[in-house]
Image (cartoon, rainbow, N blue to C red; front, side, top):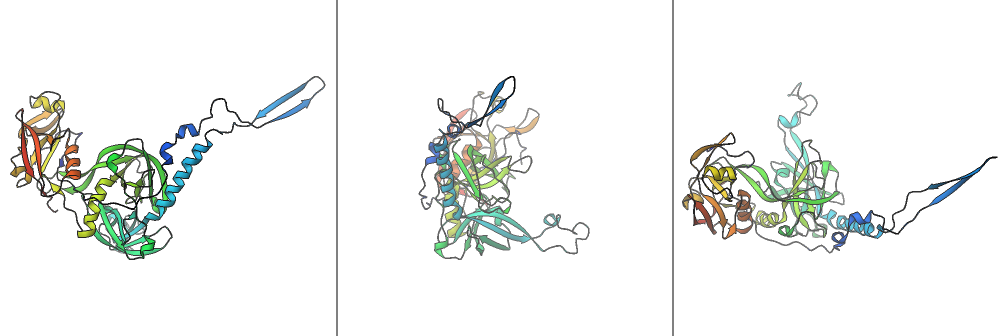
Length: 434
C-alpha cells in the first residue's frame, strides 16, 4: 500500500453508498420559526417604553429629598415574535416526540466494558456480568413496526428493547444493518395506531444557518430536545470499515454539522427542520471534552431515504464501488507534477486490483515525492469530472457516487493524464464485503 500523502486529507476508497428514495408522512406544521427574527424578539423597539416606578420621601429639619427607584424596563414589542417562536418549537416537539423512541441494548460483555464494574480489576473471576448495556435513540419509519437507528447502537446486540414516548416498552429484532452508512432497521410488533412515522425532508436543499432541532435520549433522558442551527454541510464521517485490498477507509458523505447539543444517547435520533421533518440522523460528536460543547454530526436524509428501504426489503444495502483511493489536488502536488498551481480535482493514489477502475484502465500514482516533510506518491490520473459534474476533491466523488449512481451503472470520468484531458468509461461494481 502506498504511503499516505498530506496530513489534512484522509485517504478514502471511492466505493460509496447509493441510496433508493422513499417518502414519509408529511407533518402539518406552520413554518413560523423561519419568519422569526430572534434578535428582534429581545430588543426594545425605539420610541416604546414601559416601566414601573415608586417613590420614597424623607423629611428632615433642613431639607426634603425624593428618591425614585425604577424597575427594569419590560420588553413589549418583541413579545409576539418570541411567543410565536416558542409556540413553533412546542408544536414541533408535540409532533415529533411521539415519533422518536428510546433503545436499550444488551451486548456480550468484554474486558473493556467491564472495567467500571466493582471488583473486576481486583478479581475478574467474580461478580462480573456477562452482558453490558447501552442506550440509544431511534425513530418510527412506517406503520409496519420498522424503526431506524444507528448501526453502532444495535450492532452485536443480543437483546433490544424499545420504549415509546408513552412509556411502554417492547422487544425488537434487527431487520437490516449497514455499517458503511451507520444505519440499521429494527422491528417491533405493536398495533399500527401506536406507530407515527416521521416525515423526511430533502436534505440537499439545506443551507447553513437554518434551524436544526435534535430530539433523542441523551444520557437516557427520554424525549429531550435541543435547538441550534445547521452549522456546516458536506462533511465526511469516517467509519470503521476498511477496504481489504488497499487498506483505505470508507466514509459517509454529505454529513450535516450542527451546533444543536448532541450527547451520548442521541445516536439514532432525529435532527429536524422548522417543519418537523427529518433532515438527518444524529450519529456522532466531535469534542475535546467528550461533552456537547463540541460539534454534532447527522447522517443526511438523502442517504437515509435511499439506504433504509433496502435494509427493510433485503436486510442489506449494495454500495456502488469504483475501487480507488486518493487525495485532493493542492498547489504543492500540482508543482510536484509540473502542473499549473490552480489545477483542481482528485488525484488517484491507488487502484484496487480487479476493481472497476482497474478494469477501465485508470492509472495510480507511482512517483515517490516528499512534500512538506511527508512522503507520498504522485503522477496518477486526476479526476476532474464525473458525468460532466465538476470534481474538486475526493469528497465530491464520494458524494456524487452515493447520491447519483447505483451498482452496474456506467459513469464517464473526465481525467487529466500526463497533462492531457481525456474521458474514461467505468462500470461501477458492488463494494466487496468485509
